Length: 252
Image (tube, rainbow, N blue to C red; front, side, top):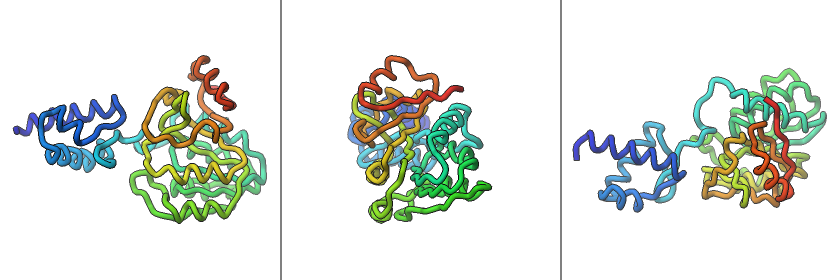
């Protein structure tokens, strides 16, 4: 097959991933009438180029949280401000990895006596730059270079030795029926964060509401509050509130 046909096929694979959220090697091989070996080569090359992530038997798009940003968007900053407003002085909190959760860190400079645990080096480094630097705890565990965060059983065991007032967790998608969902297949740590916190706060842009991804992270029964932006539709808010979730819409 010519190089041009290979590029066309890879372009169409990328389009399909962005539309469907995932694709299997077997499915792609049937669709493009080629071998699974060829598809695996395509996915490997595309992952090396930073276009997708390989997952068991297939691939997913690169999550938005992994896309490099020089600074958080105004929407993320607004969500971060609203989330930080929930935190009083001397609170014990745990913060999951993610660009949206990290956007709340600058607002914590006004807080005193905080104890903060995180699995994210990005979050940890941002906390160390605060004038009112909190007591910082790291989960440790297995380093995931894709998500730039620690994961795995060691991190989960460390977390279970603590209790927190609030957990702040991001999401790649908000399934109005099921709960929060993610591209990350290692969802155990987020669930432990929810288990060891008295209140679970999810931070997510309104554009992620209705975005269904196969990996369910937190069912609505484990979520107390969703902090999003003013773009959230009223019907979506009613559905979320019917699940027992408090919805905070951050003004832009």
